[in-house]
Length: 412
Image: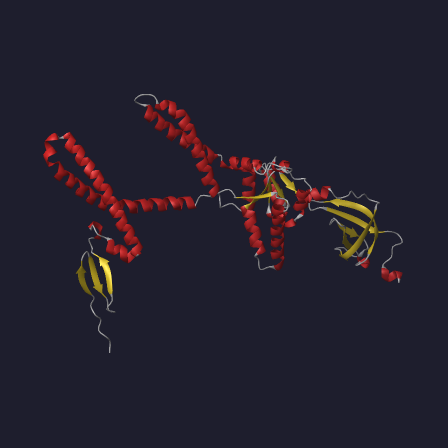
């Protein structure tokens, strides 16, 4: 048998409607004329709780007090302007007090809600702005106001229009100070980077052109030794996008990528803690750019150089007029020169592409191709260099076993 539904009952209590639901519980609602009601507190209780109710009451009392003071003051001015009303000044003052208090109580809550919405919009807008921009904007505004005071104070002494000239100077110079600093904020940031940590024995390190690291050069790790040796001067900058990319790589499910990411983070920690040579800087605002494009944009803004091992980034940056320091090129330029006819000691580790070839490596990573070296795999022996090939990827050495050298199997 289907139970009958109970029709909700409605009762009116004070300025609120009480609705009785099926469960017999009482729910408080305001009347349909809440928009014009002078007492919306019962709706506030339902929506926001007792704390909001107390805030509403306090705001209304403050508004009523302020309105009463203003009403009494206005009434007094009217009585002074119209002497014939002097005999009824007390009733008029009472009317002013009551009317002002009532009007202030009505407008206070509306004004407070409007103020809350305004502050919410301001805070939401500030949340989308970086802390750097907020600080720079405040500094520019403060500087503009100082200049406005210096210029406007003499103008304020002019009779009649002095006050207006002073206000105009405040508006103009305040706006100019804020606008100029925000338009050139990247140059200001670059200047601060050059000046920061500019004291002591490492002062020279923080002068000169900023060097901006990409992900590949951090993971490679050799840049830490280059910095420690003192071959990189100027501020060393790591964009936040590079730091985020290293963190994503370090959190990868792939073991190799995870190890590379952790190595990069360790290198950054070493540069920052041991050498005190790296600063993390926010990227340009354009979030549609990839990491490489942000590096190039930052290099242009800071007038710096990019330090990388990435061949493609190297070419793209040079095409856009940004100078690049490639650690691979530095490493290749430091390798010892090998000429045909010289003898080297090498260990063959695997066979080559051609029949009978063996592949080995020098201590600096240079590949050595040994003709007839397949039978020497796993052995270290002397070879004679026959030719040297320089490629974009690096240098390759070709050679053959020295006369009289035999594989260990044949020697036995």
